[in-house]
Image 1 (spheres, rainbow, N blue to C red):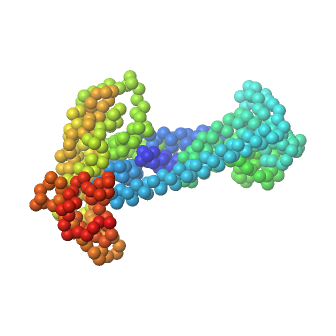
Image 2: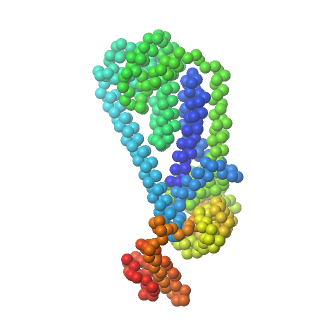
Image 3: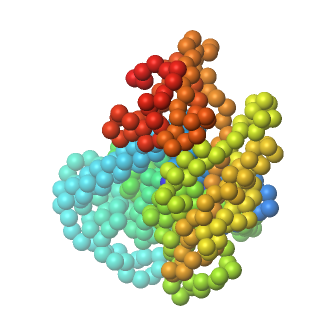
Length: 499
């Protein structure tokens, strides 16, 4: 999910930047057909550019943000026992964020589904007949469409192969209205609206997605208006018709409506002189802008494998889409993603237990109250050994050194496999150093010290646990809630009964 969240954020930023470029440089030009393709290109670029894997020696600010998002999302699955409070808080925020996003998607999905159903009902309710126009822009016979005639007043609109119009409009302004709607059908504008709606469904929180759809619908209307004028219909009479129909109600956002766009802008665009051919060079600005966006999202080498923090989940959902023929297993290659990712013996819970049992907070860092999350990168060799440990995100030299020690002394992993053969795989984990949390605004009034003796442990070296206020110790309880798998409760000293 961290990957998906990062992708949605990057795609939203791309969409916003490209839309701003279009709005400033191109929206006022009369190249309606080019503007339409420019807007569709923005949708495509914003979907594809975040998928490009570009690395850099140093991360950009946006690239660092993407790493933080992925790392933040993956933290709950790898957090140590000592940092479960932070991990649980992070997990709760992540869950609420996901719920909020999916709620927005679900709401729009229901809304779009209802609009689709309502449109089908309208198309079935009116009297229908097949119509065909032979005078098309390409000079070829247009495929047939279905003309739906309604008795009630309705703003004329077209949707896929339907043209919906009231009988009164058909009698009074047949030529202009049908010419306008045929223009939409010729250009298949309904496909554009569908693409824009899918973008809004995934990026409902992004204002640029909604604004881009409006711009796309505007270009549709500009192109349809020009088509009507080119058919020989008087421009003044056509503009009067638009004014008359501007009071109509437009009910469905997924249609191409006769009176859709802002009236003043449409009339202004019809009267505007055609843009100079040299103005078309503005479209070339998209190339350096795309390069800037790619550079903006460039991330250091760690970005390729950050998702391995939760690899067991990610790879189950998003398997590597490489063909069998493209796989050539090399014993010296270090892979980021393989068929079977490495796993710690007895799972992530045991890895958390290992870190909690062996981590030592450096004295100088503790005295200076330094805390943070160190990201350690390493390679799991073909035999499962941990090699090539390195710091990918530093907090403090003392904490970095302790994190490297912890990772270097880990037990051997179960190696990753590609096409059934063990291979070297990169891996990354966060080691969280967190100072003791204070409960409330002051120190707890009661403090209790408990001495616990491990079963088969050194009787002279008990574990000491300090309880502050209402803190609870879950490790004292086994599955039967009466004994501990780690401690001999008959030897507990200096403690009151645990409730």
